[in-house]
Length: 281
Image (cartoon, rainbow, N blue to C red; front, side):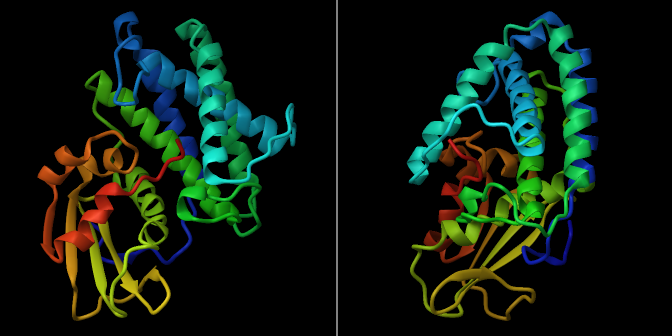
């Protein structure tokens, strides 16, 4: 486990997306016909549907992000508007691309993944992104954060496929730790309405060699991460890395997750972590 406190430095992970997608292509190429139809932890989605979603989002990123192409105007005035839009686009994309044969889907995926990797690697990570990372409470985000958000999407959906067919995951410090670090950048926003005295400290620990520690500190007006571990910790929650990604992406129910985590100190303060979600929808 990384013993350095996380949560304060930019996550420069553009090249990792290429590696994650290379693993995806290898995985899809290896699937048999029964495996394509296995259910996943994503509600109502089979392996085929998750793969279709990954293809759809890669093609949309190229069209909208790289080529600046829009086919419809959207009026997003609230978070619920965004959720409705994202759910509709995802539903439409899966409906179309699940019709492709595994061979065709995989071949197009290979092309799309190569081009999206080139696109992300070409961007200035400290420029302004076109879209803010909404689950972190940002209406405007830097490119590095939007890129890291995309990494979480590519990684966790691939893990959904691997979990469904009982294949070993891509759970390595290089690939998984930045996913966890990105997810947890949204925790200060998730805690925005949690009342606590100034200088209250919550320590979040993901156990395992891909995990780390994130120290959330309450100031008079907000929660934020600190670079140094204070001497007094009000609450500590330890989450196994095996379930962390599922917890933050609605892939495990709260009760099952609670049975696997360890909380010391202020239980109520730490249990808000179990309600945190780092996806839209």
